[in-house]
View 1 (cartoon, rainbow, N blue to C red):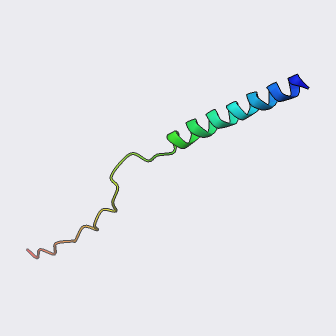
View 2: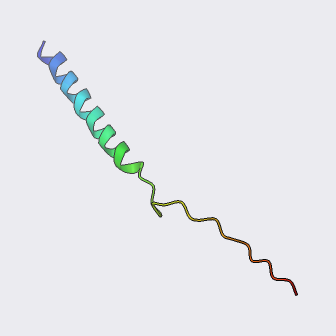
Amino acid sequence: MQRVATTTYIRLILVLLLAGFGSTACGQKGPLYLPQPKQEQNQEQ
């Protein structure tokens, strides 16, 4: 009975650690806004 509780706690700890690492690794680096589309300048020569 003690062994079942130990393996359950180990699995719980592993799942929590993997969830923690996974949630910190999914952040996107870069600007937090959508860039405005560039307007084309029509210059006739």
